Every structure is written in structure tokens, then in C-alpha cells.
Image 1: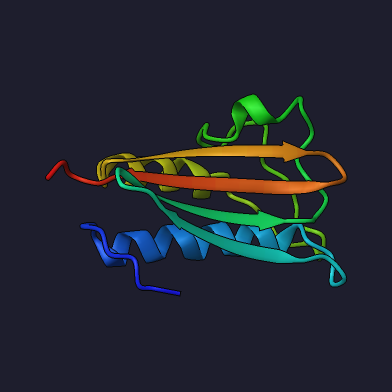
Image 2 (image 1 turned 90 degrees about the horizontal axis):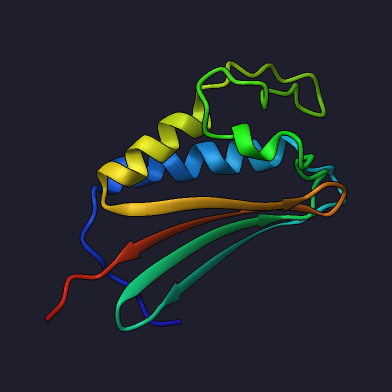
Length: 121
């Protein structure tokens, strides 16, 4: 697979990815899977973290990016949640000029997408 390059703050992006992987691990059973997808088009780079874990109930999805909102849940192994991870991730991705969104279906898993536009030539 060829390398994909785009201009960003590597440290902040790795902090976000680390948090998203941590979330996936919290809500994914041992037999489930976590996949990373990296796609490049002429105008953008898409990073996706996809899991086949327990998913997020529809009632909680509107609150995922709210600080300490009702979407906080204890992980499958009792991991506590402060409710700040996703809001901080969202703020960092926006500061990096990107977008973040989540698609999830309860019982089937969660997909988190990060997209960055490449500068015009």
C-alpha cells in the first residue's frame, strides 16, 4: 500500500486516534473485530476506525460529542467514563481542519470517521 501524506499535527491526530481505539476496545468483546481504514482521494484523506462491538443506542447518539453528557457509559469490563474523550477529539479534529462523525448500530458496532481536505494545488 502506498504511503499517504497530508499536512496535520501528528501529535494531536495520534491523541485522537488513541482515544478512539481506546473507546473501541472498551465496547468490543474479545471475539469482535476492530479495523482501520485509510482512504485517499484527490481532495481528501479519510481515516475510519470500525468495530463490531456492542454499538451505541440510537437514544445516545445525538449526545456523543457533549461534555459529560448522557452518552457516558461504563465499558464492558467496568472501565469508567468521564465523558470528555469524544468532545475533546471533536475539538482537536476541528482545530486540525477536519471533520469527525460516528455511525453506529446497537448490537452491530460503531464506525468513527475522520476526514481531512487536502489543499488545492
